[in-house]
Image (cartoon, rainbow, N blue to C red; front, side):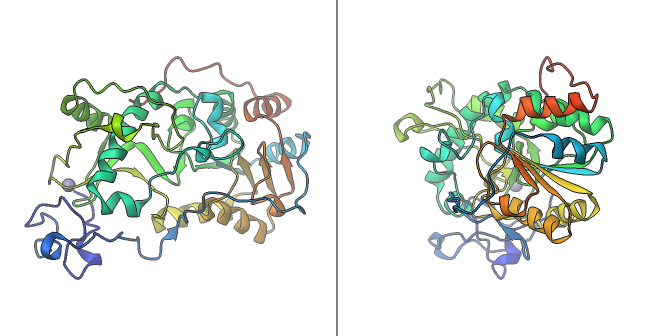
Length: 350
Ligand SMILES: [Zn+2]
């Protein structure tokens, strides 16, 4: 059983709906007063907040992007490179980016922690859409970009990989020790008792509870959320925590939620120990990633970015290469004499 995140924030009054009383973790915790108080988000004390900044407009004075991969190859040739990846590295695996011309934010508003915890209706909508999206994520395979990162790591050129993605594709490609800054869709956490469980297990329970739920989604989003109308969501049944009956949430950091401080500190240490920072496929719109770019720049370390569009970190970067990621990384690996493995037959996951 994990750490209770509930009672500590509310002077002993449980803030989340669906919890059973007496609470198995904090027996003194009481239900919400009158049952009508809206639950409040439980922040990780001192945590880094993922601001719901959904877009960012480049200013005119940013340095232009290039197609010259030499600085990236040079940095990698000396080793100690820390990779920070974002949704852009997974687009070639069929998972759309949030941003850009075809970005999912043009048609999709990601779930916020506040909405998720405040409303049973929002949770039903989320789990119906996410349940469907999980099937698509299960079919996604690592692409040339993920495989190149794994090969660079195996050849000792990387000091680590931090990803903002929740799709598990770096690990599926063979990268080890990946820090999932925003968590993983492959895990589920109970908001009452903190128990972590595999997503596959929840998927099976949701299948059983929702026989015949086969809507066709209009699209899929990088947070695993499929596009469904309220009509399609219908009366989808959400299942509770199998241990305590509490509310289940994917173990991902929603917009408006904070990244757990130990994870942030681990990432800061990785930046401190790295010789340079290589950003792959991130607009760096949210502070959770941009912060590490600023840290690297403050520490006098080269920041190199490979991203199709301008990013919020460009002013801190030595260069921004505006090339498709898979081809760019395969080219760099080739220049360094590192073979990129052929596609994996099937990914680990659901
Ligand atoms: Zn529980």
